[in-house]
Image (tube, rainbow, N blue to C red; front, top):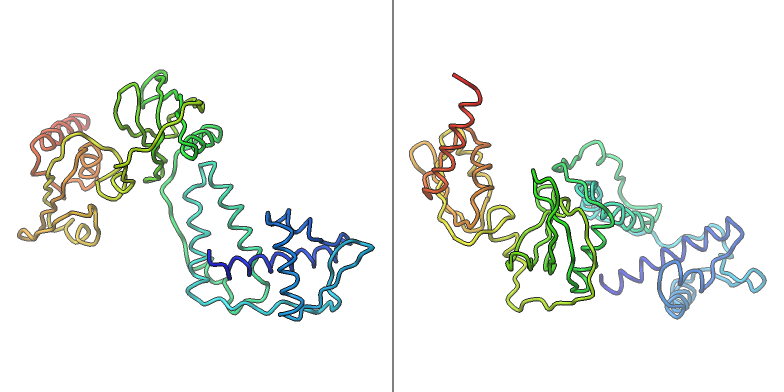
Length: 327
């Protein structure tokens, strides 16, 4: 955040604290202000001096009550003008926080956002009330994560320390003990994933954090690989999982599905070609499971042409589905 903006939020906090102190009878002073905003007393003293000498704020110090107060009760900091686009962005951000509702990070994010919200002056140049009735953000439903496990993973990530985890795959009766070097954490379609080197498999693996049944922070530390590129965990692939072999995937979409497919980017290296009334979508991929699930969601509107291994998987899946519905 720019220096000017940082000081502005601090000045608003000081102003609010002085007013609260005047109402409660327990005046705010440098010590309480510094502790409340987690800055040094020198920073608060500089801000007080700035308010008194450059903003002509009627601030005085009461030695008997050991705190600051306003000598003019009707004094107010200059109003802050927020542009319409700024206000719109703030409201969207608040609603977007709900995508983290089932994770421990949600309450921390809400707390931070409330601090920002509370730092805004009462008088702003726009009325935001209309946005609640006219704007919604519908998020994918997320999995539930144990707060203790989340904090352990976060510590391992921050301190470059190895984790001892018990990981339970879907359908498994119990977890498998693993030692993992946590390299990266990514949120994808309502799930949080930890990507790291697993000593059991001696490979880079992706773990759904909601499936970690136990986690402990070990004393052993590690160094991040020099060639580690976080973008390859999210930006340059279809889905979240990775494989060892790269395939060229080709999918034909008929006339009913083509208009919808044309509207979006599914892969940064995708190529779309018109074919009759439909279109052909091509892109590279190193893991096919998520592609199979995605193609199935299009029903008869999509047909895999390549690679043959995915075509074969699709045939088996469709046959099994047909058998489940009977003749």
